[in-house]
Image 1: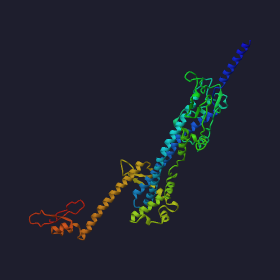
Image 2: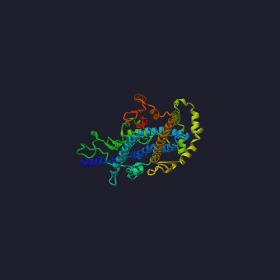
Image 3: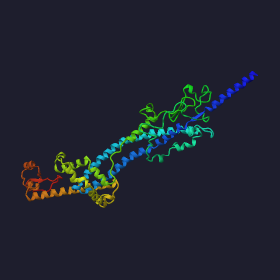
Image 4: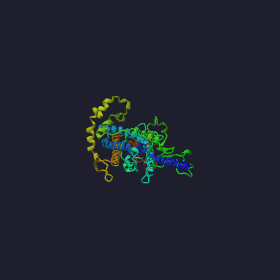
Length: 457
C-alpha cells in the first residue's frame, strides 16, 4: 500500500516536471523583434538618400555648366565688349563653383558607398534573423509573439517593416524616422537581457538546451559555450530560453562597446553621409544664379584680370572694388537681368552639326554639345579673322614702305656689292647672271623665305 502511494507520488512529480518543462518553451517577445523590423525599414532608405546626395551635386554641376556655356557663347560672339567682360567674369565664378562641386563629389561618393554597404548589410541581417523566427512554425506553434504575448506575431511582421527588399521603392528619397535612427544611435533598440526578451510560452523550442551531450541530445548545448546568433548579433541566446538584444541606443555612450560591430559601423557611416554638406547650388532661375555668382570673389578677380590683360597693367593696380562691381554688374547686381535677357535672345552660329552657319537662339540650346560647337565655331571664326587682319596689315605696311622708298625690295635694289648684301640680311647675292648683266642682290625677304624676283632684271 505504501509502495503504491509512493509510486503514484513519483508519477505525479514526473508529470509536473514534464508540464513545467513544456510550459517553459519561449519564443521571442514582440518588444524585442518589432523595433528591429522598424530599423530594417529605415536602414533601407540609405540607398535612396545616398543617391539623392550625389544627384543634388550632379544636377547643380549640370545646371551651372550649361549656364556658363550660354554666357560664354554670347561673349565669344562679342569678344571685345563690356558685356563680354561681365559674362566672362561670371563664367569664371562658375568655374570656381564647378571645381568645388567636383571636390565635394569626390568626398561624397566613398561616403555614399560606405553608408549604403553597411546599411544594406545590417538591414539584410535583421530581416534574415527575424525571417528565420517567422518560418519556425508548424501552423500551430510559433516563435514570433504578437504584442501582449497573446498570439502569433507572424502576420504583423510585414507591417512592421520586415519585407523582402524592393529596390525601386528603396531608391526613393525619404528621410529617416528620427525615433528609429538618431545622431547617437538606434533609440528603440535598447538592451534586453535574461528573461526580458521572452515571448509567449509553450510555443517555440528554438532556444531549448540539450539535455546532455549535443551530439546525442536535442537542443543547443549552451553549457558547452554554444549560442544562437540571429541577425549578426541582433538577437542572441547564450542561455536556454533567453533570447536577448544588445544595446544600440547610443554608440558614444551606453552602447560604446557596440560601436565596432556591424550596427555601430552602419550608424557611423549613415551619420557621416547625413552630415555631408551639399556643394554650391545654382539659383532657381538663370538671373538668380548670375546674381549670386556676381557677388563671388572669383567674378571680381576675373574683371581685374581681363582689364590688366588689355592694358598691360597688373591686377593689383585695380583697387576700386566697389566701383568695378557697380560698373560691370550694376548696383545690387541691377545689370544682370537685362544682360541675361539680351543673352537668351541672341542668335549664334555653330550649334547645328551639319550646317555651322545656321543661326540658333541661345535660349534654345540646352546641351553641352550644342554650346561647345558654338564656342568652337567662334574660335575658328576669330582665328580666321585675326589671320586675315594680320595679312591685310602686313600688306598695308609694305605699300606704305614702298611709297616711302624703304620697303625691303627697295632696299635690296640699292645693294651692288656681295658683302653689303650679306650684312644687311635682306637679300641673297645672285651670282648666276646672264652675259652682260651685273651681279646684284636677289631679294629673299618675305615670311615664306621665297624669292620675290631678280632685281637685275
